[in-house]
Length: 169
Image (cartoon, rainbow, N blue to C red; front, side, top):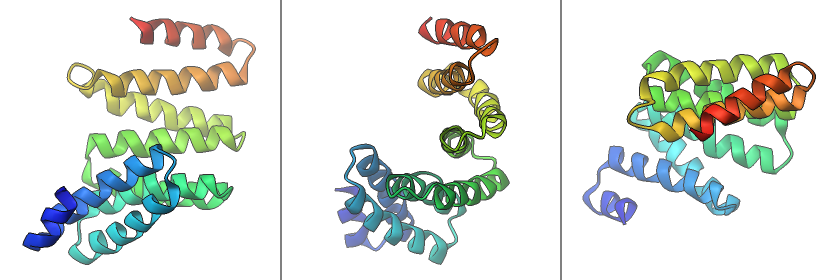
C-alpha cells in the first residue's frame, strides 16, 4: 500500500523507501525474482533522487541476496561492499548493520574467515549503541559472529559458545 500511495501522490522518496522495504522482505521470503524487480526499480530511483541510504540498502541486501541465490558470490560481495562504502559515508547505523552482516556472511561462505570476522566485529560495533532499543540487531550480530567462530573450530568454539550463551540472555 505504501508503494501504491507513493506512486499516486508522486513522492519519489517515499516510493524509494517502500521499494527498499518490500524488495528486502521479498528476498527474505525467497520470492527472489519479484524482489529483484523491485530492487532494480528502487536502486534506479534512489540514484535518480540522490538518496544514498536507500541506494546503499538496495545494494547491500536485496541485490546481494539475489546474486547469492544465483550462485554469484563475487558479484554479491561486490554489491554488498559498494553498499557498505556508501552507507559508511552517511553514518546510518541500521544500514551499516545490514551491510556488514551481509558482508560477514558472504565472506564466511567464501571461506574467507579473517574477513568474515572483521566484518562481523564491525557489525558488533554498530549494534552496540542500538542494543537497548533494537536488541534483535545485537542478537543477530552476536549469532553471526558465534556461527563463524564455530565454523572455524578449534579454540574458537569456546568463543562461539560464550557468544551464543550471551545472545540467549
